[in-house]
Amino acid sequence: MVGFGAATEKTRNKNNAMYTADVQRLQELYSEANRLSRKSDMLIMSGWGLAVAGVICLYVSYRRDEPASRVGQIILLVFYVLLQFGTV
Image (cartoon, rainbow, N blue to C red):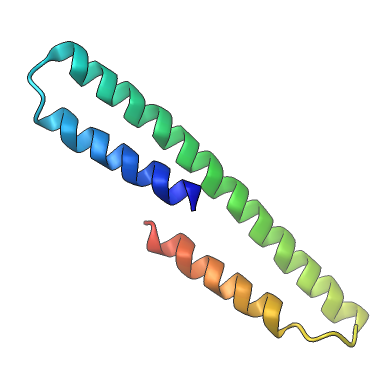
């Protein structure tokens, strides 16, 4: 959820920069927007890494034929993918 907040703040800063006449304030807003963009990108990429690790663990569990239910893991992965594509 931190990634959503960073992406929202980045968009807000870029929108504010479009209506600012002060050059110094404009540069501050753009530099803050770029910082937040890198932060949200890092969080999104680490989230994808965790999702891939979850898929690998799910596959290994399937191959070992473990008796535990995998429905919860599948639901969480589907929910995560829907959230990821919702930010695009």
